[in-house]
Image 1 (cartoon, one colour):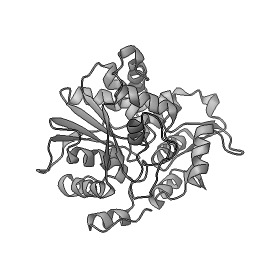
Image 2: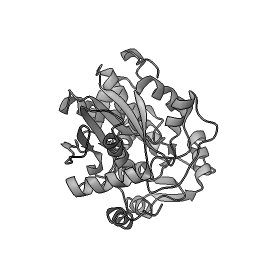
Image 3: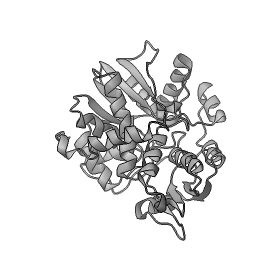
Image 4: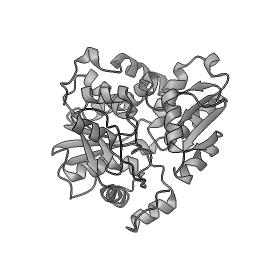
Length: 329
């Protein structure tokens, strides 16, 4: 693991995150931090409930900051992105409020609940194979797509918006020992970690992945991005895609204390526990942090888990609550 950087080398400057906090305050909910009600934990677990945001995920922070930072002239032809659902919903929600066109490339296999939500917010969707979507994400272009591309994670404004969560954590629980953050593209982790490191917090920061696809954990084991990333579809959509941008890998090495990998079954158990003990509805990606904390991989003490989203279909949730293997879509 690389040595932690000093304040000057944090990827997203603290000043940018503080500016984002002021810029987006009218759009977001300052989400609560609550204790997980369970006796089976090796630590005191707190839950940062981003699933309570207006679009039921943290992505509203990122989308708000990215669009408010842009000049209106840059948005006149509309906007587009590549997203498995949560960033798409957040971008569509803001686009509807700003009365601008929004188009989303969605990879095959995402939940219908997320697609329906995107449409409810007035955005158009184009379904593409996962490799095609990943290529569009890397190249930031797709056929005749017009308008401004907004990257769902590798964008300074997006990461600064996410970093506002870190500011809230320091304000609400300054003596926390560890934070566990779901790793998808990495924008949430880099944003929060930049805020915490920028404030010179000594908190340990862990990313959480699911074993059905864990490219970041594999990269840390190998010391480089793997040339082949195993991928098995699961109900844990939103994270667990077979890619790792080199830039995000570089940031992760500087910021993280480790990567924690959990099973699909452990994640399903965390979803059930959150629902049964705290009446919290979390999607799979939002529950991996809790699964990691319950596994003991982050140690003891006071651990904050970022519950990143709650967009899960009712059928899938019912299957999990009944302890049946959930479908992948």
